[in-house]
Length: 309
Image (cartoon, rainbow, N blue to C red; front, side, top):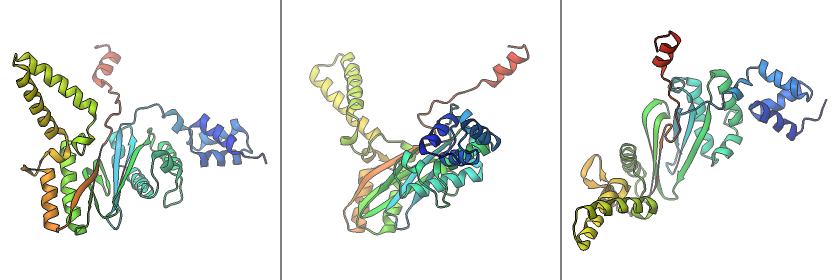
């Protein structure tokens, strides 16, 4: 039997787009014959995955998971081409399996190369799903938040099944208060983040370029009013403060109580628990955000085919 080297397996992987384990098996079954191995993959339906790799995948699921002690939580986004796939139980199970892997492994590449609790390499699992379901899929992103002392809360919006949804938020609270109370507060803040999509945790974290852009716009608007320079400066600073209140999490008015900011909500919780409390971080995954989606005008296509366009 021919020596099935890692380089040979990688070569077949590059040519077929199929997972490493399936490529290795194909080469073993065909005694290292590359062309025969590709045919073997085709007969198994696995090579179909490569043909779908250039198709836009902006649907799918966001999966979230919290550790038993409540101090670590993860979000992953597993994309597919259509929203129908999000209802598929096998696809949902795959998203949950990947989230479980993400509890121990960080980064898309590392997660893709890791094995699930069932012993299957994540990248191979996704490739097999592509072949079985018939849509392009990809593990797009992942994140893990943890605290030494405190809680990481998870909120899933537009839930599609156990632990999977179309939008997920994590909020990490650092403090020595009661875990149940911290989870309650964290979940409320996570729900707020889901609704408002803040740009940063604090004013210090806000992108300086975003602030400069807004300041330039506000300055131009204020100058157009014909006010003197001193008044213009005060107008601009007032509008910048308003901008912070709109996009900075701690400065935002709490959606469940607009008379209270998130900063004040955290301070109130700290007073109730008798322990210092702070929001360490937050993450918001909206399914498909930032992915260029192809839209098909089916009505126009039908009209063209029937000669009515």
